[in-house]
Picture 1 (cartoon, rainbow, N blue to C red):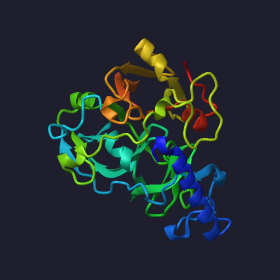
Picture 2: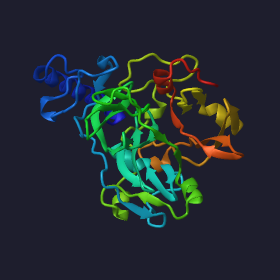
Picture 3: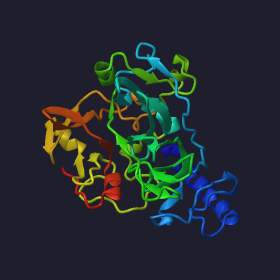
Picture 4: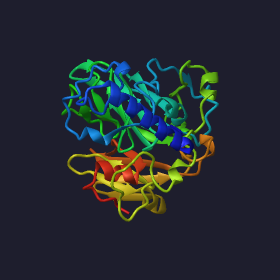
Length: 336
C-alpha cells in the first residue's frame, strides 16, 4: 500500500470489492472475499459498514508478527539514534518496537512482563497503540483484515474474528461489539531516548530475531506521505483551521479527551493542558517522510504525563494526524 503507488492500490481495492460483490451475500458488508473464510458475525455491528473499505490486501495480506524475536540494544546497530520506536515497560520488562519493522507488519502479538499485549502501528494514520490482549479473562491475538475505516487499520482477533478499530480499540463487527480494548501507556520515541530510559531493554528484530533480520528493514514504502496535501483512502470531513496531515497529540480520555497540535508544543517546548503535561524534544525522525526512515525530517519526541501522588506518570496517548483526530473525535477541538 505504498503511497507513491496509490493508483495501483486503488485499482487493487476496486478489484477486491468487485470480486467480493460477486461471491458473498448482500448482507455481508463490507463484502469479504468468500475464500478468506471469515467466521465473523457480520450481522452484529454498531457502525455504518459502508464506512469500511478495502485497503488492497486481503485478510492477513499484511502479516502480523506472532512469535516476536528480540535483540539487545548493543545488537540493534541497524537502528540509528533518530529511528522512531514504540517504547514500553511492563513489570520491569522494557521493549522497543521499531516502526521500521512495524511498517511492514502493523501488528505484533507479544507478552511483556507476563502481560499479553498487541502492539499496533497504522502507517496511514501514524497511530501507534498497545492494547491489553486479554478480553473477558481470555488471551487473544490479532491480525489484519486488509480493510480501513477513516484510513485507519481495521484488525481482527483470531479467537472470535471480531473486527476492531486500531485507533480507538473499539469492536466494530462481530461477537465483541460494544467492547473496547484496554490501551497500555507507551511512547513513540527515538531509539536514543529509549536507550537512555532502558539501557537493558530489548529490541524487536523482525521475523527471525537476528541482527541481519533487523537490517533488512528500515525502508518507508509511503515516501512523502506525511507531507502530502491530503490523506490516502480517506473520504471523511477534514478538520478546520489546521492542515489535515499536521501531527496532533491525542489523549482518548472519556471524561476529558484532548487533542493538541504538536507544532504548538514544539514552539513552546512544554504545555499544560487539561491537567496533562505535554513536552517536546528533538531527535526523532519521521517514519513517513524519506524512503529511508532514519533520514526522515525532524518531528521530535512528544511525552504526555499526569501528576498522581506527587509523581508524573505516563498516560495513554497517541501522536497522529489532524484528520484522524477529527474523524474519531469530532467534538474535541484541536488546541493550537
